[in-house]
Amino acid sequence: MSLSPLLKQHPIDLLLEWIAQARSAGARRPKAMALATATLNGLPSVRMVIARQVDHDGITFYTDARSAKGRDLAANPRAATTFYWPELSRSVRVSGRVETLPHTQTEAFFAGYAPAIQRAMRVSTQSAPLADRTALERAIAADAVAYPDVGPIAPGFVGYRLVPAEMEFWAEADDALHDRALFTSQGEDWRVGALQP
Image 1: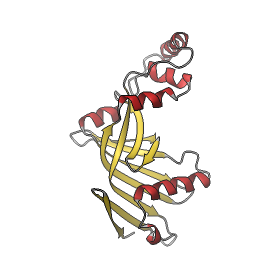
Image 2: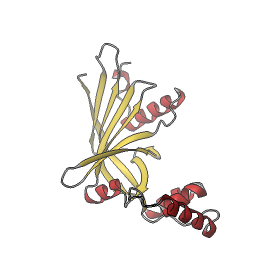
Image 3: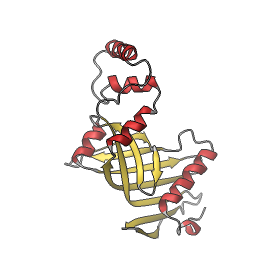
Image 4: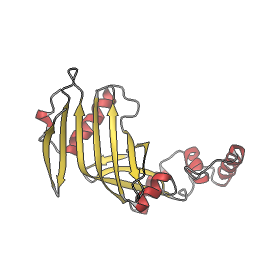
């Protein structure tokens, strides 16, 4: 496909369009993205997360602030992410600063999880070493007694928004002349240009 006709769109609108097309093409998790963070000394790490909301304000995701990515973001609030849809042979790379969402917004999102997921998040400290799985399961059972339905927000549960500074769109071509376009934020506007394959 040629990206040329699409370059007059807002890049977030184009991202949303590609997410919708991936969903229609059968992608199981069209909002799954590889999120890369780094410590202040530049040590990078990457993992898969789900984009919970995509709009003109940015890309929202949630995690445990005590996790590796949470600690990275506390020290260095910048990140990059990539969406990839093999069903479409397309990807989008996004990079920019990361801001913390208001606690009320994070609480409201957490309340939408099923009780079993809430329990796992309340009892587990994401990324911490697991010494005894049986003890973890007992703690979850105790939480279920304390909160049979919806319970309080998990300790450390935080919402983040990646505010894009750059967005690169890539569409594969059989002859390796892949279409690539780079959108760069200019305040309220975006500068866009084609990149060589």
